[in-house]
Length: 171
Image (cartoon, rainbow, N blue to C red):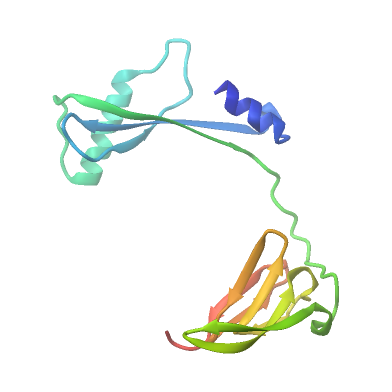
């Protein structure tokens, strides 16, 4: 846990913004499938094993339709999931680096879809204006990601700058 908190701190998260979620993968002895059971915050008394065992039996009953309260329970994995809480994004409207589709077009390439070449526009993501509509095939490039809009699909830039892709023709 200390290493996880340290790493979150290096990523800029204050202790108040850090979340640690502890859980155990448990199963009845001899079974091949586990259930992930969340642990609460540790107390000065440690873990409440009776509560943990009761939660495992409850989850097993819900998942498989039966439980065996007298059976031995095995611990398979102990897990720690960590994340940092970020502020909710502002509802501001998207502002593109350009106002025209012409400025967003980087180039055209031959791209293969379903065994045939297609003349495909390549768009710069940050230059696509709000409301832009792209008919597939199209490629949208940005730092860290490339989005493919296949033939028969349409991509639209919404008011928040999201690229929403919708199938226009049946599969």
